[in-house]
Image (cartoon, rainbow, N blue to C red; front, side, top):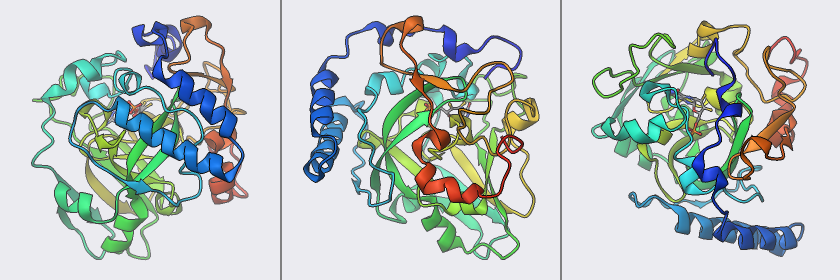
Length: 330
Ligand code: MTE
């Protein structure tokens, strides 16, 4: 996502991409065989659960129940934990994909408070432990598609952001939700660099924020989030490019006007407010028609997959954008 340089995501083969896929091969073959039938669905989600148990990072367990939300149970094989946690964008810790895993150990995730403010009837400071308990944790397997052209499949743990929004009771004139993430120069070595105007801010329209797929996320692979993935709490919006999914959130603000977001401020013609995954709208400097799945192997020569409209979640979210010109509202 660097503004003036080449597209980072296309050019870096990570060591983990050239290692054998190992344990996942069998599971994927089994999933292929089973895909289609009802028994297949049940077993596929069992297999994904099994994958989580085997690939976690040894952090505190965070079990979730299987989610009933439509679109929350992908049939695809999960990306290996080590790939999902060593190839990251978290610019507060550096701009190289390997930097967050190397540097985010300094992030202090307890105590952690999230401030809810703005046009809301119940503003206040919410401790992370209370937020974790606010609603039942669910397992959700989502595709994450980065604007740079790579993607992963991640088993997240969390609950619909809508659960929190309902509890804090937005006022009638609250039209957007703004997410402000931590910007602590003492623990985040790149805060202060001029890459972005810190803190990293993102936002959603109220109906997007209320959509059941929008996940307030506390864990992945059956454990709490590792720091580099946005501990202790992040958002995941699976039909939008990954940069809409802010990490390590400290403020949730309800506002009337469309919030000014970090990437939009940095390069408005490249990173729009909506940023729905759309293979028909190219980034000004590269095509968005295909993607490289991390873990597929082959490095630069990996076979690319076709990118799907709304990242494959069109049936669930397409109606949110009825009547909008998606070329203009990119
Ligand atoms: N959140 C913060 N606070 N800082 C960031 O640099 N990068 C975004 C998003 N959230 C980012 C962030 C981008 S560009 C992507 S693609 C996703 O996080 C990556 O999430 P992942 O590392 O879990 O794959």
